[in-house]
Image (cartoon, rainbow, N blue to C red; front, side, top):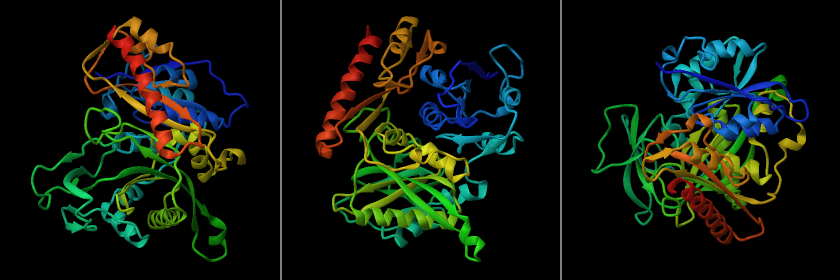
Length: 437
């Protein structure tokens, strides 16, 4: 029987806060930090309950078997183990906003639970909106309208998308309609045919630099009051680059490894991406976070790859760089007041790099090793294992923690990338020293 672990802390944010909020995702640590920075008092619901999550959240609910049916969770009212619903009902005395991170939108029962709970307000797309936002055919349509590419693809209805120049395309990839973080992306070993299932599609691989483009969408309701349709107001919060498999190790070629930035792009490309965000918002009615994964090929052509209507891992780079707080933007778009200083998009105080350190083999997290990891400085390490992980095995390819780096924003992008990678690798060696001793 799967159980839910509930932990509390005495953390109280300076400034009184704007009330409580829930942060829900496979790993909610960075979202908790962003919401805390927005003066929310945060209840975290995730699969790990990392040490630094517990240090910032007022309550940590740990669901180690993420994605299981909620009905399978323990119903026993043990002191540290309760059913999620019972725990939530105990602490929710008003309609608390729910902010979601990666993995939540792919757990239908969790989405249904959050959307139907009388004490919660899920700040996320509806089921119908999510279906539209997951449509690769819609992505291809709006990309073309905005002057961007969308790779040649084949789904159960047949081919669509744009044929790339032979010099920048290579293999065919098999992708899942419901996925994230590179999970479920595999190389097709043979020329694709029309898939039998509507749950997957094939796509021509585009080689180049992967970028996470982060928008927030708010709606001008005043225009509707004058007899016109409400118009979306899109704000580009910032752009980050993803580490490639050549730059940082990982358990599979396409899994998310980390990000760095923020980076600058040409005004022309920025205008096209903003147009793309407006088209997506108009077609779907989305409010708040709208993140797009794009890739720029060797000829300078920008291609849309996918759309994510949630908090994404790269948004932490924007928060730590001082550019803006994406959680504050999302809250404001849904009508929760935030100081204007949190909603400004500024020049970065520093460039930030983050990378996930994956276990290279099966590892035992002894009590001593966890204590050593917990002693690491929080400005350079995150997602740190909690006491709950003591004397537990990590499977090969499982995340250990996240390493962080920073550098002068005046450096050129190639120079900054090298400096950040050097720092991240140095931190990774320090962790390896703990785990291999």
